[in-house]
Amino acid sequence: MHPHLVSDKEIACREFVEALHACHADWFKKFTGGCNDAKRELNSCLRQEPLRRHSIISRTISSLNQLSETSGGLWVSLTGYPVKDRELNESRPLPYFSFPPTLGAFRGKALSVQFPRIPMLPRPLRHRSLRSWTRLFSSISQGVEFNGVHYPPDAFTNVRPSILSHLSRNIYLQRDHPIGIVRSLIEKHFGSSFVPITALPPIVTPQQNFDELEFPPDHPGRRPSDSYYLNKDWMLRTHTSAHEVQVFRSGIPKWLLSADVYRRDEIDRSHYPVFHQMEGARVVEPSEMEELAKENAELERSLAAVNIEVQDVSTIGDSNPYQKWHNLEHAQLVNANLKHSLNGMIYALFGGLATQRGCPLQVRWIDAYFPWTSPSYEVEVLFDGKWLEILGCGVMQQAALTRSGVPKDRVGWAFGLGLERIAMVLFQIPDIRLFWTTDSRFLSQFKEGTVSQFQPYSKYPNSSKDVSFWINDQEVHENDVYDIVREVAGSLVEEVKEVCDRDLGFGFDD
Image (cartoon, rainbow, N blue to C red):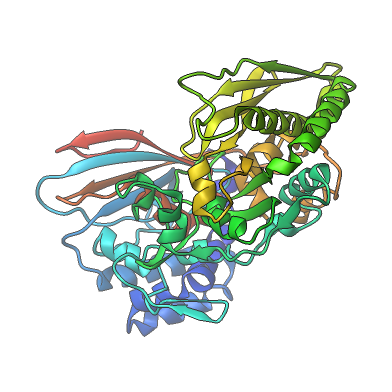
């Protein structure tokens, strides 16, 4: 038993009450209804002595329990360490949240939830069902306001307040933030001829996000279980490509687009529902091909002068062909320019680390498949003995360019990468959640234009908890569970994984 988790009742009660008031005020108001005694006791809790707070919380939760229905719905228990409760004079596990099970046949699931630090929390909370629980923890029943535009809710609405709170963070624009540093280093490498685009709004239409990119109607990315919808007509972009057609139509021949993107995803150290992508593209006219050949020769000489080893095991053939409507010589020149340009970018990012370790930077090109490029490639970097995928790229499909209003005689290349993936490697940041912290102990470690290794500062060990729940004839997507965990526990949760799935059974704590 970790002493900090159990003995510090002041932190436990304070964080519990502040979470109710500060984070879930709307839910708290709905949940307590007209129970003035419960509200009054919680309001006065922070003014009490630490040893009295646990007693007040326990009595208050008992009052709240009387308000909830005891039949139907979902039962969830997040169980902490068994401790001795002086008031009840019994040893018992202290649950975080608990709901009564539905009578009848159950499908049981058990999840393991890992917290870097979570204090002891008091007695159970109960409510009616997962559906009710989900609605109560979403305060957007009146719709969403963003940049002066109102988006009314409907049956598609599934975005949560915790996700909407990220819309204006713009950490990729902060000069001394690791994400902003990586973005700036890439923009600096490509120079002023590539136009940086960073201010496009995150709310797009499904047509922009899917239809214009020829996603099939049954593509899983369209499902509300995978994407965040404000309503059926508006959603949060799931990739920077949602703006690709718009940018090409503007007539900019060379550009770099950076933005925050949103996807419903699992909970672990490398996944977060909000992350950042950069997409770059270049379109070349037939009259520019002679100049492009000279540029390729210069790029090749520059790469030969630095400590980089490139293993190009990619192929051109039936599975990864040049496009038959392209002039072959032009396509080859554009393909070579793509490879030289990205090899130079990767060296600009990772070359310093390789030099510090006294070895050449090793880069590998392999065949890939993307519906909007051909030929297509993935690029990997050897780091700590493992090949890490850095980006995807290729010569753009002519149909995609034509759809965007680009003349048919032009050939283009494009690449896309995740800024978090690169930043986690460059700065040795072990957990993607750290990018969103406002803790000065994290932010003060980084400076614009400089790659430095992150120094951990947390002194608390991980703490694993178990969650069990039963669902009666109701399909619930795992991303619904992840969203509820995020909404309740915020960034405290490091990882959630399913450890048991039982039919007609009961989950239990290991």
